[in-house]
Length: 380
Image 1 (cartoon, rainbow, N blue to C red):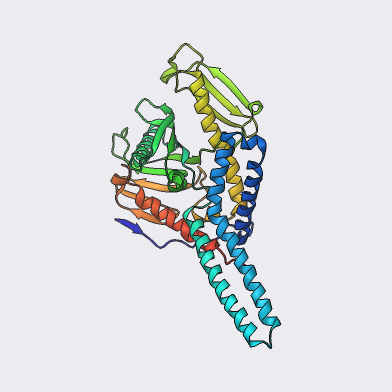
Image 2 (image 1 turned 90 degrees about the vertical axis):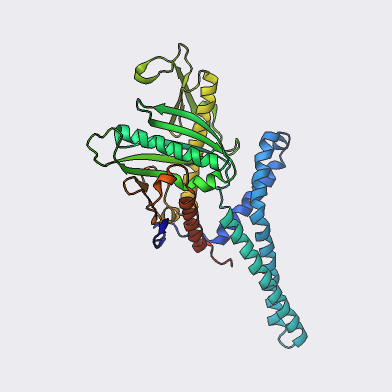
């Protein structure tokens, strides 16, 4: 019962010119060369923890880089045949041979280009992360916003269970009525980032709150952030860049949870990012969880800057992923979900809130694929 209205034109954001397919493939080729240099270093070769993520990355990239290198070879062979065709104007046999070679190499080029585009669309750069951090925070709306944050948490956990992903609640700050001021999930499994990457942003709810006695509809909000959890080599957080403070954990209303200083406040000086963790009784476990969340936030911050430089039009496709951007409305009286970025509307909100997210996720992925196809310019 999804109602897909005509999708708006995906205009480019003003600023840097679009990145051509050739430039993008050149960057991937260069990255493979960098990895091959790194894995040849003795200090990397003898450390499996350093070698493994690099080899995984190389394997992913080679699925695109190898056909790109073959395409370049076919293009060069075609150009040489074209030069031969021009040079042998009076030799009919040589001209026929050269023309046959041109036709053969053109066909090879087209087949390889289709292969390259298929790989790019199937697994866009950075979307193959199998571990993510998902944060949900109550926004405007007081206790009702916190209850909505709880509903979003349950929606994503139901969806994760249906996908057979591993999940772990890393941190939760509950309210007296059972809502969440903030809750942080760790999810792991195939396609987890690819499917949830467009959930980042502002989520708005319209409904009669549990705390409303007169039956009036209120509007509240929560924000979601989805961040890939980086491999150990993808983000380096230096010990000297961290400020770690310990304190006693506290419960609702200031009640002391324990008598030991197990809570951890971890700050990253270069970015100003801060994580507070007190869910575990062990200070070591709280430090471990805080570092996981902080690493994901730092990685996401740096990657968002790289993505902005790499693709100036990313925001105009599906959205920036900023928490301030309103991406979706959940209207309970009308049983309606609307994703404002792609004009997607479905009248089965009762099912969506129970974890039936596939229709909207597939619509978002399809819109992204269509936008990417506009970027995959002919290689020259």
